[in-house]
Image (cartoon, rainbow, N blue to C red; front, top):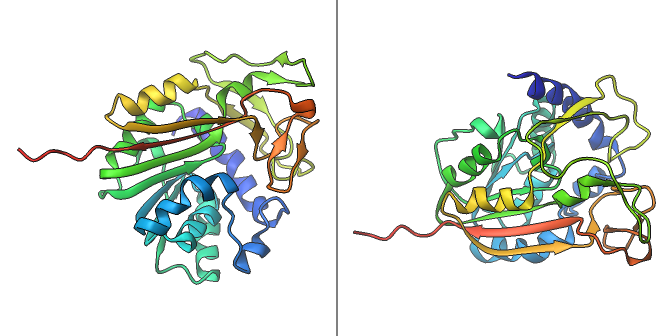
Length: 275
């Protein structure tokens, strides 16, 4: 394990232990049957689950609440993968509590090196995932390697341009970090997006920048066919301090500031023609 991954895993293990207890995740609501999926995924991906009842591989699944929600929404089975042993332990416990252990599996692994040995009807990943990846091409190879012919890939994620700015106002924004760089960015992060006041021992983390073009190209270079690429001026968490939340759990900049904060992409792996 390299220095970056080891540092990030220590950081994420602490947050994985704390996040299930936060209001942000509302685990109690999930236990009572509520879905943890956002309206965007329910609109763009859940109809596919309801129609096809596919097997799903969920990359960077955190403590598994979304993975389990995918099964509740119609997936025939789901496998969640995360590099945090704490997250995987919590996910397995939650699967038992939700009576979904028979249709879900959780694996501790680095998604860049994942060799699960089987293919899935769909590969799925959402929110806050790409910045932890040192190699976007290896990630794309993992997606394609585990996707069956005709299978669907879906991602909803923080827009990479949003990480460039800070102190975004009605008509101003300050540049904070580069959009194009091959070097990891170091942060000393206190608190968490799920609990800004939380105190952790391991606050250091490394993030990797990947432009939207790099993400799309990495997937298409490996043969995936992009069905859509959508961009939205809202986030699923409070990226900037002056944002306000609507009834759908979306966070907006003040004054209708026009900046892409979220994107979603759906792609398919073409069927192999018989010779």
